[in-house]
Amino acid sequence: MPEEPLSNEELRRRYHTNIEDLPPELQEPLRKLMAADARNRATGKVAPPRRPGDNFAIGLDDNLEPFPVDKQQPPQ
Image (cartoon, rainbow, N blue to C red):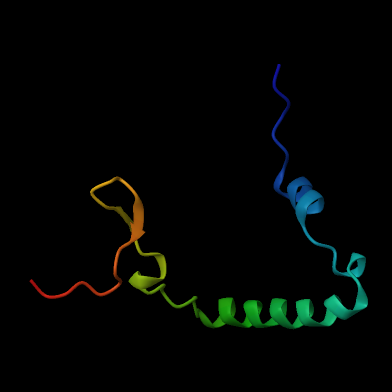
């Protein structure tokens, strides 16, 4: 019989990073990042969209060997 799913609070307790458990040299940068993230959420800012070229396709040549497709295709 499957177990009951964990509540949000139980999941947060299990998987949330406790800043005090981190080494001191990582605590302050993480606090700054979390504060900046909270400010961005409060002001409605979102991450910029990714450029299409960031994840370009891989093609296959006539011998079915992979090769990267040029990011900028020549005009046809």
